[in-house]
Image 1 (tube, protein in one colour):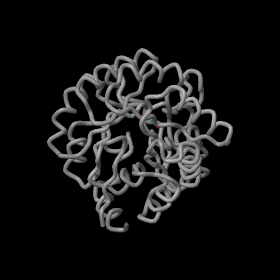
Image 2 (cartoon, protein in one colour; image 1 turned 45 degrees about the vertical axis):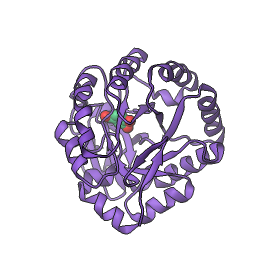
Image 3 (tube, protein in one colour; image 1 turned 120 degrees about the horizontal axis):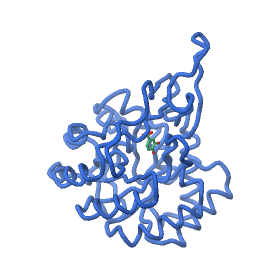
Length: 287
Ligand code: DHB
């Protein structure tokens, strides 16, 4: 079966790739993605300086999915700017995820990374795990302001990674904002469901350490939220903006459901962390 996909004019040999954050922090991890059957190499969201991230334990998995509060551990964009050109040898698209603690961080990362020409840049408006920093994607004016400037800095196709929204009014106001800004060429939906809490009743404590135990939920339990967001944004844009569906994919059938809702390609997070790179082969085999 032909599993190739096209996102904003970029052809992916197959439609299944890693989600930003999953096994994509170090050069070795990025190269392993290159050698795997992933359809693209997506980097960890990068900030100006390298970060070790939040204190451990910061990731917890359970039968329904995962809870994380990694805190943006990454090598810093200068390191990724050096690594990205060498990843081209794997013959698949490279998608750079950029993030920041301030607006200026985004601009600086965008400029440095755009200069090394990844195939696509995914602007992460939805990191839920920075103490004291709200997710930009929940502030429509701030998102608009940021994207208005980024679209003039970034010349490769630019997409946005959005947090989940839970109300049709929010779906349509975010979509209208993106349409008004222009220059957004694809959507990645959704980031983790922010600020969930899991309690261990035996130990009488929370299961991860940062932020008093609050963290982003991923995996099976978020699939209905992911599908709803893919569907809502697809209905607004009617196919004018390709959507990369992310959230709750564990089987080929889950991928099919994302595609039925409007996704052109998909990303895997929790299942990739838990199962390893062979998840790409298994999922492709299940389609
Ligand atoms: C982290 C988590 C996210 O969901 C995200 O979009 C970016 C970073 C993190 O905690 O590292």
